[in-house]
Length: 186
Ligand SMILES: Cc1cc2nc3c(=O)[nH]c(=O)nc-3n(C[C@H](O)[C@H](O)[C@H](O)COP(=O)(O)O)c2cc1C
Image 1 (cartoon, protein in one colour):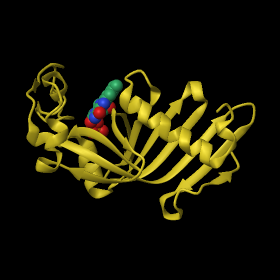
Image 2 (cartoon, rainbow, N blue to C red):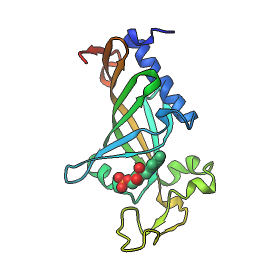
Image 3 (cartoon, rainbow, N blue to C red):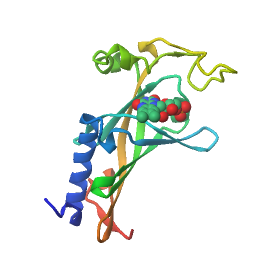
């Protein structure tokens, strides 16, 4: 479908197609969204993460992280996140606002089990992520630890899509109105 960007449903479908692609394909732009939170003292914080799942029926995404990372402190105060993706070949900007639930322990064992040992290295570092290290940049140890593995379950509430073709089109969608969508001035 060459003119997917001309309809609200077409744009919405394409977004989900790209999110699914991001989960499956390491080289896809949607593989590594920018994930933004608000710190306890009100600062915006943005960082790259890996998109692990994208489930359209529940409009939920998952990201994995270290339970001791600063983003967890932020999400405990303000359980909201914005995700940003620029799909350059599609000329499509995806912005998502999400309500975030932090999952750990038995609830996430099924996600932990298939992660290879090398991948698990991202979850379990001493001292905790963000701790000052003094003069030695490598004065830390990585030791995979299921107890520090957290899944951020991100329930999308609002979607903002911008398509920069010969014409510029912008559309917004909300969970509250069943994702029917509306055009916005870009
Ligand atoms: C390509 C790339 C992928 C990353 N993926 C993740 C990820 O999936 N989860 C994560 O917690 N951090 C990931 N990081 C590290 C974060 O960007 C960030 O540095 C770290 O989580 C600490 O952030 P915080 O102090 O704001 O919590 C990734 C970084 C890069 C460069």
